[in-house]
Amino acid sequence: MDELDRQILSILRRDARKPYTEIAESVGTSEGTVRNRVERMTEDDIIERFTVATQTGNVKAMIELDVAVDVNTSNLGGTVAEWDEVDFVWQVSGEEDIVLVVDAADTQSVNQLITRARELEEVVNTKTRLILDEKLG
Amino acid sequence: MDELDRQILSILRRDARKPYTEIAESVGTSEGTVRNRVERMTEDDIIERFTVATQTGNVKAMIELDVAVDVNTSNLGGTVAEWDEVDFVWQVSGEEDIVLVVDAADTQSVNQLITRARELEEVVNTKTRLILDEKLG
DNA sequence: TATGAAAGACTAACTAA
DNA sequence: TTAGTTAGTCTTTCATA
Image (tube, rainbow over all chains, first blue to last red; front, side):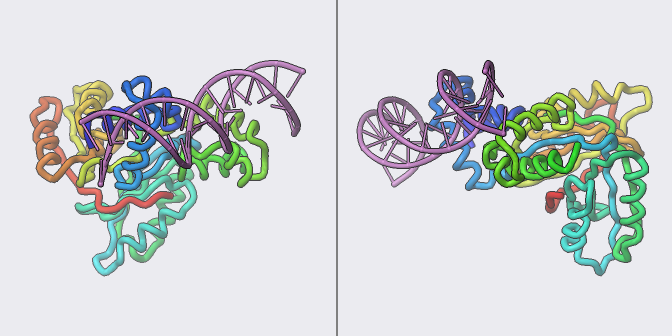
């Protein structure tokens, strides 16, 4: 991870489909170097994945789950990650143990997801926050 | 947003650099159709951006900021989004108003970010959680 | 939807540090 | 030995019909 790696990542973060030739030109190196760097960072898990940030619905929200002490949090996380409208799931430290980030059609859909979570016997409590705005770093 | 759009997005979410020709083959349509669909979804802001998920440091965390009532939350969000090691910033509803998602070198770096946040006069309180694991939906 | 020109990516051989 | 470059070739993209 040197300055060149950081520059490449910074460009890819804003447009992951940008051709390597263009990236090379803006950072002042050759296409091959950019490609090699990206390959290496992918192998080293510095790059986790090339992905697409979407808003397919109208409401984004965080649904935090407070989970019973005797529950395997990772398994539960895997389960809820499969639910429709769930973008990703974090296991976190703190009072709540799991955070679902959802991209739902409307508030009613969010409500259905909350209900579904509360119906799980592993889930003790939930707390939901709407995501009103997102800014890239 | 029909089934084909959803299939295309689902593939791009796992590999945003996958060639349209390959995507076309796996969803059973032509390259031009995939490209047109992606273009349309980008125009419609269903696709917000093509990006890269990284782990450049060793510790990911959420730093939640409780902000004074008279503060312009959006401006503050823009400020902290510019900080080094901050991946993105959410404005949220609920007790805390801003959530920073950070990818820091180590716990000490996280601590420095928390300190920096607490030094802002707009910030009344902070709450931090480590992100222990992430699962894709 | 089909097609061909232009652009991009990949391989492999070479160079430099 | 490792990273960077380059030329040649193959693949993908894009505009037009």
